[in-house]
Length: 276
Image (cartoon, rainbow, N blue to C red; front, side, top):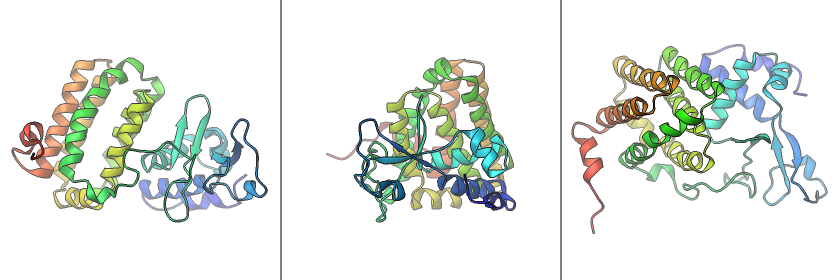
């Protein structure tokens, strides 16, 4: 049971702020779950998340969290999306949603989640050009899988993130929903390896250079344009039409590349290679 009064955390602020506050409340609610065959060390139940200890934190169901926090399941789902896009929870099919524990020094505690391609790499060292080149290689190729495998709940989550982008009033709010939209698409592929690969792109998108570049070129008109591109992607996915979805995603990422890096940048990312 969560501490009494925790639901007051989500009573004020913007939609994104409320989701983040609720996410912090949820992040403190995990229960201790032993791995099969593991031996509990003395005191481990009181100190989960320490490196090498055989315990991790599993979240209650959305229904239980909603009841404990006094909010709707939709609000819980939005908060879980915040945690997922920040890499703070791991969703395991048939087992539940688990918090990703961190060492006090900021590293990932052993056994809390699989290693990511960017572990040990400073996201600030990854250039926006590299992020965009990786996105253009990976994201369109996810969509045939999404068309084939996405459940109705997956599509509802993609649409929810799309609707959130409609209400965004600032660059940071729109970036939050932009991340959530593309994250939901990756999750809907139901391919754990591709989702893990995509998490590396998400980590890089949280870097300072990417954020500064997005803010520098931001405008209400550009946000509206990106939102329209998102809607075309979603409509193709909803119609289960792979080719139009791939085309819409490719067009979207090309326009993002041009907006962030300038005219001709999309072609340069396609044909350029490292100097030998």
